[in-house]
Length: 347
Image 1 (cartoon, rainbow, N blue to C red):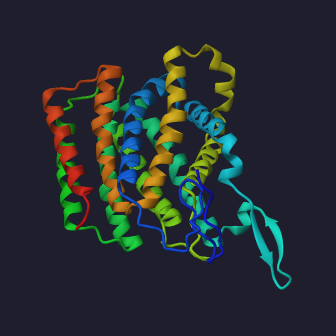
Image 2 (cartoon, rainbow, N blue to C red; image 1 turned 90 degrees about the vertical axis):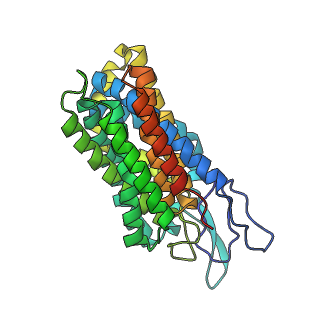
Image 3 (cartoon, one colour; image 1 turned 30 degrees about the vertical axis):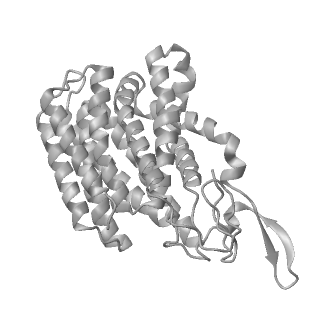
């Protein structure tokens, strides 16, 4: 995990490992392979999170589950605090004396203002809507709703970030959304554990709108050579992930009492689900996806979200016994073809 780039324009650029480029030459354009693999890993972890969330939220309720999930992620991030929020050495004019400044002193004011909506949209509102949705609908149907994100991100990136999605991207998004619609229609009605799939799916759609807004803000805050100010300041994506985790822990703090008084009585599958949601789905998936978003156009990385319904349906079948028939498998293949079209390298 690297440190955020300093505010001084003459400072050497830091790569994702924290090693400075001292050659004096412009760094080579990074390969799209690693960001693509990071986004793929993130959506796989998110796909598994839907059945895990279904198991845990039914046992604990939304607020206790989300607070426990955030605390697991915070415990894993704690040893890296110094690297995530590094101090910096600056020269004080006119004497040139070197002094140590705290991390926040180097963050441009506009970036600080953008942080509030970034962490409010995700994880706070995103998880509030999604955890309630998982009480009302199936893991498979909720996973399918996530396919709305690329359209929301593509439109937002076009309107707000000035990105111009290629025709191939729009064809891929349309193709994959058609596969998602097929997947939805072939899934049938909700089960006994999903008392109101329609309301649950609408809440999941609101969660996806929050996710899309968050992706656009993360792109603005952490993009390479992009929209930053003050000498090209940009955020380390893992620092943003840590701030999101902290914000989530504070937002869902009302659930702390239920966790602290009842954690010893949780069944083993609930404990496993909570640990996975905190370590894998919160920390791992958000960290990987934030890093991928900082290296790829928002509209392209958003297309990977169309793989979430495929993995969610698959894991829902494996873990919860939710239906996965031949028609759904064909629809999932259509989604993956769409993702391949939408995320292919532009010529």
